[in-house]
Amino acid sequence: KICWLSGMEHAPLVEQRVFPSVRVDSPDRTDEANLWRSFRVPIIYNHLAAISWIDFSPSQPHYYAVTGSSRVHVYDPFTSSETKTVTRFNSTAYSGVFKKDGKLLAAGNELGVVQLFDLATRGVLRVFRGHTGPVRVVRFSPGLPYLCTASNDKTVAWWDLGTQQLVNSIKGHSDYIRGGTVFPSNSNLFATGAYDHYVKMWDVRSKEPTLSLDHNSPVEAVLAHPSGSLIYSAGGKEVKVWDVIAGKQQHSLSSHLKTVTCLGLDGTNNFLFSGSLDQSVRIHRSSDYSVVHTYKYSSPILSLGVSPDNARVVVGCSDGLLHIKQRVLEADERSSELDRALVKSEGSYRYFLNKTTDGPVPEATEQKSQKKEKTTEAKKGKDFKPRYGSRVRVYDKLLADFQFGQALDSALGFESTRSKEEILELRRKGVMQKMAQMKKNTEENKSDDMDTFLGEEEDEEGKVEEEIYADPIEVVSLLMELQRRDALVKALSGRDPYSLSCLLKFLIKHISTSSYSAFLLHVCSLVFEIYEKIIGESGTTDRLFRLLQKRVKQEQHYLSVLGKLQGSLELILSSVG
Picture 1 (cartoon, rainbow, N blue to C red):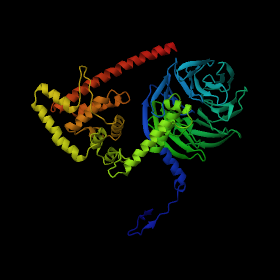
Picture 2 (tube, rainbow, N blue to C red; picture 1 turned 90 degrees about the vertical axis):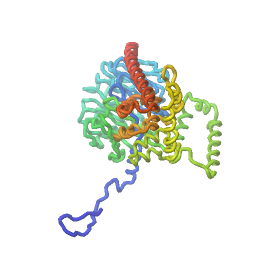
Picture 3 (cartoon, rainbow, N blue to C red; picture 1 turned 180 degrees about the vertical axis):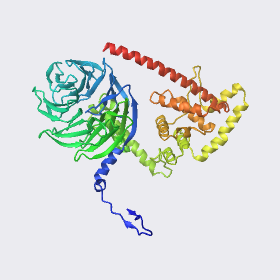
Picture 4 (tube, one colour; picture 1 turned 120 degrees about the horizontal axis):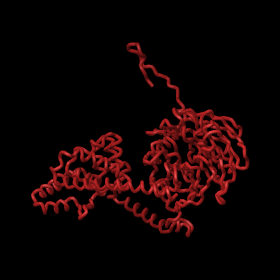
């Protein structure tokens, strides 16, 4: 670096020596930071209460269970959508965990009861009663048919899954137990951490702790390394690493500003994750425990999970928000991941064919090769044009140039298939001429011409089929990005009748989609507020505004009814369970 010496006139340029930092000398560290920085595509779900526990299934395709309030939600890793919900709890549920095969799920509750569920039917297979306080820790023994539990009644227990009998129960802590972990290398061991500041390791064959470690702070989480030689404990602002063989503290990590609430390891066991009430997740390298990367969130963090294939990082917050980060895959990785999911998904058509034949599905392989040959032959032609163009979308380039309105137009689709000259010509001649012609017609012919022009058909109930072929996920994602940049109002404003009609038709068509109806209702309110003064000047947009208003009222009514129905079902299910 070059700098000027202060206090001297006409001072010569002097080279300033900068000592290299660890980041400069270690290219691997930069690569690791880039790896975790590539976890983008954030997806956020709002739950009813704080999310206390997140667990990934050890078996593919690695579904993950999210525990919060009086239910356990099971999410599909590929669609990031909720596939099943376990609601057979009379009180707050805790620590929903998968068995090794991913077919069974166990969870405790506020009343001290532990339940075992069959995920296929969501039916209760076993009920374990014996604890007198909330069961905050539930784990499956990796090699034995036991279920390990720990409760606020200060006891640790092992239960036989087959006979539903209590195998062993030990009262070894003097305060609430909040963390627990099993050892993959030794099925007899179980470690717990409590508010009495101690981490204790137990053996199912004994009544006394085999190891006792003083954390010097109330322990919130405990995690065992798969090798069995290390234990991680989180309490206060520190994460401590313990050597199980020597029974001593090996490291102490103090990278957080507030209480550390959760711990996790990645699929390779090379990175340690820690979540805290300071609204951050720190990623530490396991070799030297230095911070490689940090994720920032909007609320205190209570739970986290990392998929065994290192493809997803899921974080649960105190305000009920579930944040899902996914690694951006290349095209080849994405297709291979999808193929693996289709082939290995039990119960699917490809799984059945793959089980009855040796090797890949013949028809799928043949179709794939034929498609590849056709693509290769097409590329040899002079007039070949890629189907989807370059990897960078048009609206991405427009966003980079701060052309927010044009970026939204491009995502809506009517600019993606036509050149700029064609669009201008369409607007100048076709649109304006047809709108002028409609104004000259009578009221009866006017509505018919408008229906023809807009490509819509309205029946007696006011239903509409719009000629909008834009990808709703892309458009909604772009609208959310515009809102994040405080440019949503700017992108929605200043539209001519044609572009405004496209936007209104998109809202009319997709406002009833449950995945993003709440956000589109917000967009509709902005559109009504922006164009309130010009309503009545154009017959084309006026009719669309009326239809959109009707759809908004219907959607608000449906949401109100569904909310009441959901509350009634919760009361019924809680009384039945």
